[in-house]
Image: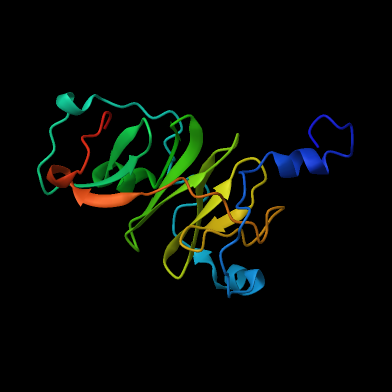
Length: 182
């Protein structure tokens, strides 16, 4: 437990992202997934995450109706993340409805997913598995293939982050709720 005065292992483990209480079925052995990871080109953080996102009000943004955006619609926050930004950063560490989250996008597979991140932030590891982005959490350096949503190495091996809700994809002109920030 944090502050328990122990050997620090519990503090390190608690520093990572919150994990699911009801894990999803994961048929792949973490060792096999680790073995299948390959270099994606740029090294660790060679593709910089957005760690302090800045947004504009929806009425200040001009996007074409067919520009792809990924969105989050929560109880209070309605946020759009343009694909044109995510393709260059792949991870946005944000806070939505008061919950710290990582909004992630893999341009190679076209997958967008959101995860609860707790007090840590996620970055781009520079590794791929089956052409999919492998994230790492900066608190423990555990590795999290995006589409598997399961840590395959580090102190969180086998854990799954909490889901931050929907990360839907639409053309900018097809939003169901008007984003309050872009």
